[in-house]
Image (cartoon, rainbow over all chains, first blue to last red; front, side, top):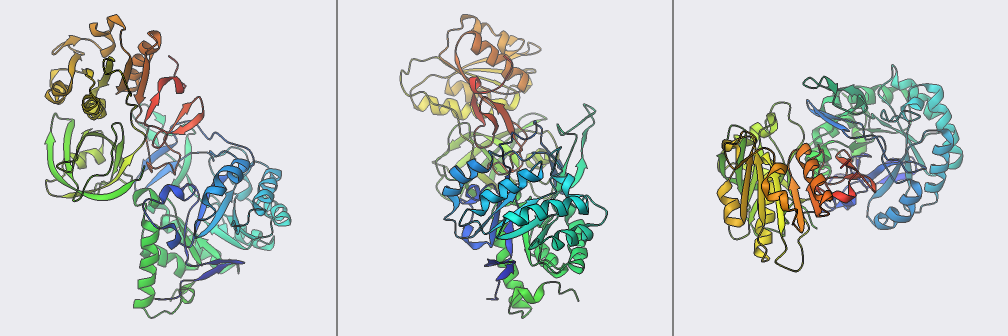
Length: 302
Length: 259
């Protein structure tokens, strides 16, 4: 049994396998299918200061080796999370992290401040990359200035591990990663979904109510892997890699490209127990190749 | 209710029409509790451009033989693959999902009307069987394009009274389900419906006019099926709710339908 422990800032993870926000609910949705304590951590559904109804149906389109979504951050707001959801999930024996989103910098700050008070939430993931919300979200994540501004403001009020989730819908993701590193982010996670589109040729209308949506699933993996590789060369803070991971082999690829930890997203819908299988697969791989720790593998491209 | 993920063995794959098929699946252990109106998420393997599981209504369950029948329609590459699954091959299911229909508690004399259209009749057989076991006599009203599209009529006739409408009049009364003479009285205690959206809207309209309680089973497009992705939402009086966990069965009074 290899050592699977990794650290992301002050955050200690028992293994590098995490589940991606928006694909794993609040964890409890998956409790019938797997032992939640076996994975390194859970990023819960994107949370905003105020409740959001999200976008109109249809919000999803299946595409080759993936899917488009336009959920639009439907959630009941941070106060509901704190009062009604947090008490039900805080005993789960893995790291629980909250994905924080907003339309204005003040929203991000207010939301982060409230979550900072929760004992068993050791980290937040600042979502500056949601492509499905008109205001904010991705608007902050597509320029170095915008990204810097949000991270600077949140860093002042948030004292635990601050992870910033980056958008792939940019020309140079490494420069955005550098900007948020400069502002004090403890880690970056990448990639959020790629902006995409699908058309129903019978009705000659877009499939999604929002016309465009976020593409995820195995189809985005090569893009995500390339971006992790580029960021690894550009920043010193740890990288959490995600984008289309559907088995342990994919996870090893991301770690080799420079990821300290990985997230599994869309594939949770196909196999709700995939994350535990990835933990097992990584462990067997390390043993087979004689690595004592998964940390020896990070950025270990030959 | 606990959810499971298991491989089931295909015991029968019967072609009913050019577009509809019946899969009989068997589990290698005792079946858990499954309610009428619930559905499964079936994994479709080795089908080109098929990525997500397919949600399919449970048509019938037999705990003695540990089998479950799924009645489905071929609408794309995923369901086409399922229609061609070989006997003795296995398929992976996440089940049982969703809430299920409300079963009345007392007064077995209540007139319960189950209105289905097309392959939307699938969950109504299981519901009818459940009601029959409870001592009710379910009344089925089934709509189809023409006689050849009326699926598994004998099963419905064995479970309760069955009335048919076809659009071309080749079987039963001609027209849509809501045109059937059975509805003229308006004398029903509860209506359950599943089928095309336009049909369910017409049924809901009828139920509301006659002040009859009505539940509809929705078929919104889904990704996860377990309430994680929030893709399959329906507008309700409580805001957007997941059809996969808060539904698929809704009381029509809770929906934001314009009826």
